[in-house]
Length: 90
Image 1 (tube, one colour):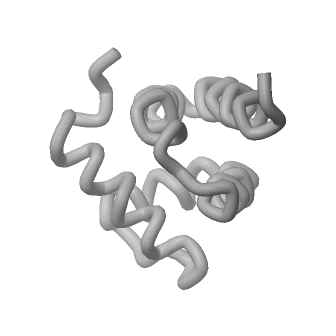
Image 2: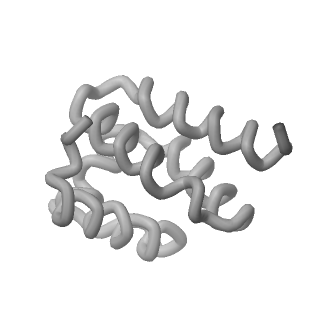
Image 3: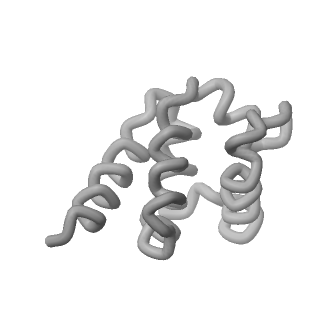
């Protein structure tokens, strides 16, 4: 298993154990479907996003507030994922 594959698996696990049920569901499903297609740089940004507070993440992902500029593109991708899939499907 490559270092990149190990990193993806760790990020999926971190996505599943966020602290709030809503973000657990959204990020678990997003990560399972999208991380395999991310570059190493995109994975680094996603890992940094996971360090943010769940309440902030939820507001960014639902459009209740604007995301930090560095995360704007990633949050748009997550919002698109939520819109396409409902975000909560297993």
